Amino acid sequence: MASICHSLSFPSLSKPTSFLTPKSLTQVHFPRSISTARPCKTRPTDSPSSATTAGVQDDPKTNSLPMSVDNLHRFFDLNIGKWHGSFHQFDASGKLMQKVSTRLSVSSYGEDELISLIQTLYIKQPPTSTSISGYDEEPEWAEYKIKETNMFTVDKYQQIVFFPDERAFALRYQTAGMLETVLRQGVLGEDDTGEESPRNLKLPSRLPSIVCENCLYSQEKDRRARAFHIMDPKGVLEMLLIFLEDRGDGVLSHPSLDSITRDANRILPFLGRWKGHSITKRSGVYGSTIAEADTVALLEMDDMGQLIQDITSTSDQRDVTTNVHWTGNIADNLITFDGGYQITLLPGGMYMGCPTDIAKSVAESKSFHLEFCWLEAPGKRQRLVRTYDVEGLAVSSTYFSETKLHLVRGAYEYDVILVVTPYLFKILN
Image (cartoon, rainbow, N blue to C red; front, side, top):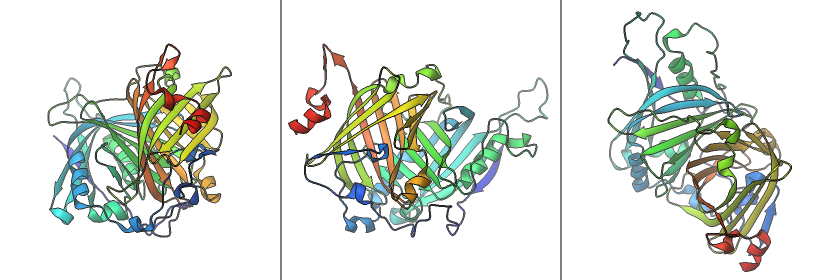
């Protein structure tokens, strides 16, 4: 098998991105809006990006805790193997711009604190213009060596948050240099004619404000979805990337995000009432859960075609209850909520959410969130929400596991108490 080898290393951290310039990559700040626990009461909020955590308590001591060796090994074990999949690039409105086949080989070397993860990405190249008619040319795969992950990088540079039991993780990149190389060389291949970009391919900014990866693993098979938010230097969503991958040594068919339903119906599976549980962990503190909560989320459309979303979250200690209620409008596959938050509906039962303007959030000293949701099977979904502080530093991530509640004879078949109105919910608790 022919291959083209490229080495992908992250550019120097001495070149900070435009408006998000953290004082220190290891320093973690928690905004007051998410760090102060209060007595038992319901707290309404008017910002959709505030609907993540109930009762997150700030403990400065946890900020200095490194990742444990045990959890580092568990994180590596979750990733090790040969992954076959497909890469999808979408614009902010959910339009598919590019799709290519990929392979990822992941292994490790070393022991204990010195263990490192090695990843090699292979991207299937387009047929060359010099191929001989009637001759089946062997596919060529470009090879990319991705920067190693070890005890030092997971906390200092990548700010990984890992949920070992739930099989999910989130991390951030300092630049989009790797993605640009993969897109430019991996997709163009030998047919690069010197144009700025091929048709339907958009290259990311060289100095994006944020590159965030949220990864969710299938609950039914050895499959995972890795979702990337790419925010441009001005803090506006530039593109969305999805790697959908199956693990296995044999020849596997590459999974794809081919939509089963028409684009106009992408919203339908998410409508209804969802009951679930959330776990919040702080960045760089593996195994350190700082909050758990029971959640009830409602998404419905009124007679005027306006979307109504209501989320109620109650901490495990039952001492803090938050309620977020907001309205929004949908145009094609883009939902825009009042308060400056947007959700892009994607094929394959997925959506990704982010602020419409991160620069505005930073200017107003507000924290913000990036979200990835995967509804792999009807009525069951996972969500991963990454929280950033007012300086654009990733401070925590929240994992949600939720089940849709079905109406049976005028009542919901699961735990009726938890699906009543927020007012009655407050009284009962």
